Length: 164
Image (cartoon, rainbow, N blue to C red):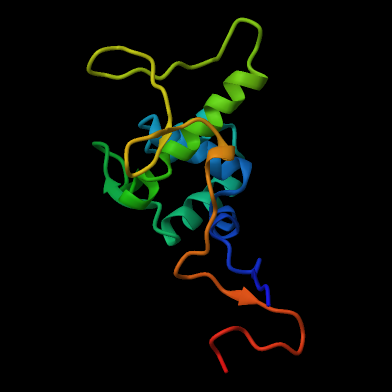
């Protein structure tokens, strides 16, 4: 009997439920570039105030950003938004998305932003590699296997293997 993985248990779908929206990704872009304050985020993203406020609230609720209070002299206390470890872990995904956009959608003059290593100035390259150190050149070199959290589905009336 052949069983298959259930589509309702997908990490990509769960991640997209949090970050799979234009304004959210633009907020994260700015956070990675060091922008922390609401007014600056609004200026750099162009997001309407209500949308930006909602996205920031959601990113805080989901644990990707945290609020840190600050107060300019003579002003009221406000919050700035900083990436949490969970938020910082999205950096490779945003870089991959940016590099894809640079490759296929950039203006003829080239990409609008270059990422370089702060230590030596060399351009950033992003690669997959396995735990043994082999560089993976593309999806045809990868095998997807069920993980420990996989949920299986079987045709109606059949009992999943090992559950009888």
